[in-house]
Picture 1 (tube, rainbow, N blue to C red):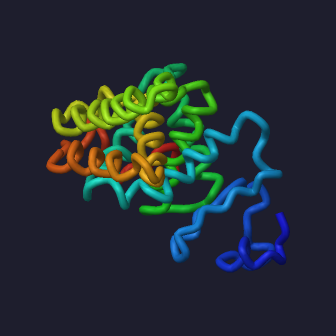
Picture 2 (spheres, rainbow, N blue to C red):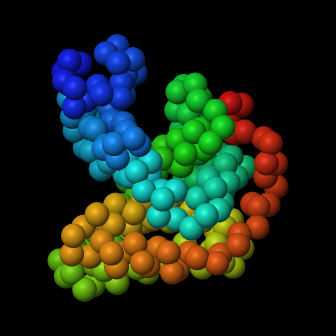
Length: 212
């Protein structure tokens, strides 16, 4: 990482990039930067999918769906200690608190960190098992989108788990594939459009997880 490289610092003045930052997305230019020397071996996929949430989350999910998914991640605070979802929430919320952000920025970071922590815990995108066949792979991606849509449309977000977040982030990552990206983007819109989720049970809209 060269702090004098204008391709890296055009949106970040030298010295302003957090010391532990591993990647960041510049919305103005639509460019995502990865500081490879700061990303530990084996953590590349989790950091990549974190940034995918920032790059494509709100823009490719129908209005309201992103916030509904964030709300369910917050609701994982009420899950039993030691459960996968509670562990994902607590680690993600802790990292958001350490970042010192609030409001919509904190919500987006919570979702992104939840995906990152889930992958770091070993949760793998379901569609990766079908990457040998383009047709089977695409079907698996679309099915993963539909599973999340079914939970949104059926107001059963309480059933949302870490696997769903990882699968959705993986699907979002595919929208830039030249050969199949348009199909995936269409599936995201068509599957999730019209879903009107209810607020997660027991979630106070004004309450923030982890005390931040």
